Image 1: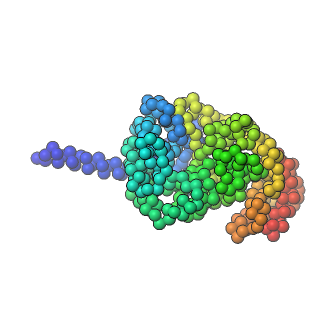
Image 2: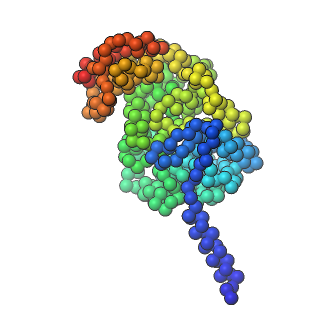
Image 3: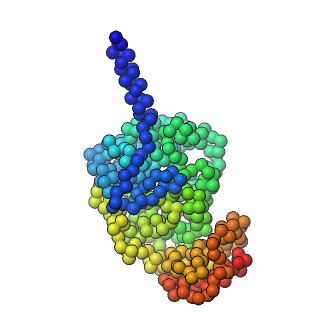
Length: 416
């Protein structure tokens, strides 16, 4: 007869093996939620996702109520960057036995020093931080392992060939993360990482104010908004285009400008107030975007974000509001006031007018047509030279963009 110790050892080994073989999260789609595919991961995610910002102010019981309310509404995607043990434990308790219903975006490079959170590339600290995350969430895997915040090119260059990058790859090979992602607030850095071929998901700060700032601008500095671009920054446009073309998903943070700034005309860099529904509609208008993240601490706050799902087209329409900021910014950079809203469509000759305008604006701001830009223009099914100057697009345009002039300019710049 086996000893009690031997039996316990076998049972323990069985439990451990069972835990290692647990399946990835499987989401059941709720008819009240809108879903998109998360890039090349194949995961289906609700377009409104849950951030971790509200879990620091509530207890474990309230956390359970919040997570269950989110899941019951169809929200099945969550970002967890915070290394605070309280936040992680609250979310772990909140998930309870419904872990498999939530797709978790967890960060690698978050360290709790005992008093506050730190960003780190030290592998030993990363290991401790990540194992702590698994333990407190009562799980053995994270769906999207996010390399935590790369905002400077030198930071990305510094980890090439490093133990940090190898650790991330090892986590995927071991099944502890199912997919690799990265978080960033800098479009140049995010684009470089996207082009590396390593990531399937990028967590990026995206909203109509940030989109109109110069590359490398500090979005938290009020002076940044003294000279807003009249359209989307070309580097950001390239990032969104590249991600859409290469099936890399973007999950959006700061959709409301950070601290809901865009909802208050006095606080907003745009000097006009947008609604939550308009902000979400703006970010989800980008084909590469899969999820707009929000932070809440109770079900009532969740309901405010979820209103988007039943909002009317009029409630979601952000173009009239942004038109005022376009007028303030002027058209000196050459976009002609175009916000790429596509209200001008359809063109009788099939021209994607908004895309031609985007590429033309990028060329004008750069002062040249790069080989990459020329290739992107060439890939369009129809070009500016196909314009018959019927003017139908200008009749539809809510911003009085001189489309026919822009098409002529595009022909001159691109050659056809």
